[in-house]
Amino acid sequence: MALASAVVWQKADDDDKREQEQERAAAYKGVSATDLDIDGVKTETMAWWSKDGRSVILSAWVDWDEKPKFIRIDSGDQTAKKEIQPLKEGQFPMSFRLEVEVPVKDRYQAVRLVVAVGGSTWKDGSRAPQRTIEFRPDRTATDTETGERLKQKYSHL
Image (tube, rainbow, N blue to C red; front, side, top):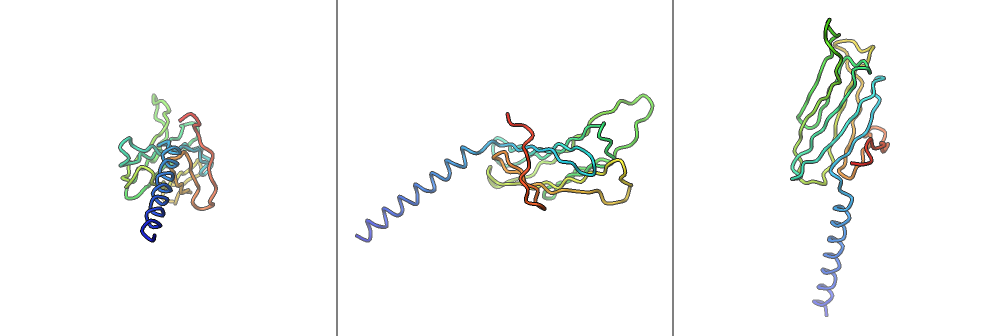
């Protein structure tokens, strides 16, 4: 009798695990994107999980019209940064996109991105305001400081 009970419990546990895995798979989108306002600069951020589930590309995009002076992103031990110089004669304004790729242990793993942006009043050598965002592959993003769930940028992704 005890053996039969153990088998029933094991089957129920296996069924629960299988159901949880199916729910995770159904929620999986492999992308999360949100807009942030940092130091008066609209910054588009995105996390894109690789098809093999071994890495995530994290990016931040800022339009020239936002007048950023500094942009930096960090995740894990990966960093990308850009100090924006005034346009020289004959140059055309361009948007700025920074990107880092970080490894993950599985395709459902959340990743954090620290985004620092210096707006029009930012001074060289000073610390730029920053936000830390936790992205999840089910198309969700959370501000880690406030706990606020952030609105997704692209509903069609």
